[in-house]
Amino acid sequence: MPELPEVEITARRLDAALRGATVESAIAPGINALKTFDPPLSALEGRAITAIGRRGKQFVIEFTGDLALLVHLMSAGRLQLYDRRAGPRDRTSRLLLRIADPESDPARPRELRLREFGTKQAAWVKLLPTDAVDDEELIATLGPEAWPQPPEDLKARLKAPRPLHTMLRDQRVIAGIGRSWVDEILWTAHLSPFKRGDDLSDEEALALREAITTVLDGAIEHYEKVIALPIPDKLPLPLLVHRKAGEPCPRCGATIEAVHYEDYVMCYCPAEQTAGKVLKDRRLSRLLK
Ligand SMILES: [Zn+2]
Image 1 (cartoon, rainbow, N blue to C red):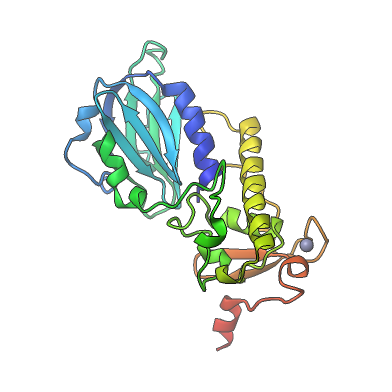
Image 2 (cartoon, rainbow, N blue to C red):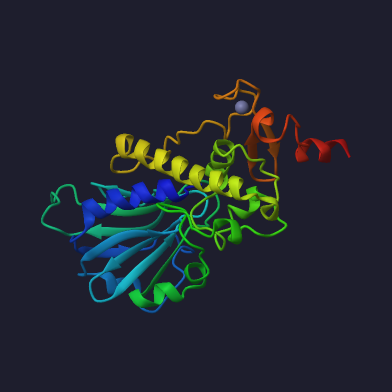
């Protein structure tokens, strides 16, 4: 699941490579991927890419003539730039932008590809007038960006009787954090994932803001060193806690515990985050019912 750091590094790499490049053709082999029909995808032909950026976990690709593609990778999408064209049997292709700029070798034409792994077709794209992007509900309801500066009023934004683990992933509260990085952030801040947002002290809210910055900065700096085009299928997430259940906590050595939900896993250090308490594993308790 690409989150803010993964989308940020991808947008940086693609922007550096494609700004100014002209679209030769655009096609959507994933029949469900394109969620708009007017203007048609063919409207992109001959237009130049003016910027590739990020809003929360979404990409915004802007073109001359005030058109923009809003791209949502969902859980298994990738945006990648290849110097060859996708074969017709590449079942992962959802959207292809063929690039026709003088920089590309005619024998190896560049292609920006939205690909999706797994069986679900969930990733989507909308082609919109550039100024309509902000009116899209997903964008209009986004909270302030988690990075580079988490919102000053984070404590007030989290003031609700909901667990921090849920609130920090709520894109309307703060934009960009998902299931992987939330575990790292709460561990860094020494906070329980189940602590309620409205139970946060000033000191804890400060620690949380600092942790958001430290963790997301660290991830992006790591990606700056290791991520190159075409953008790998699997990004090497520099995780310390998430997906590390059963391993020793890198800070205190206690065993990292996990709570399994239907489609994700929450990991934490019981010694440092939950006062030694091992939280009930929902999967286990359901099996025992
Ligand atoms: Zn620990």
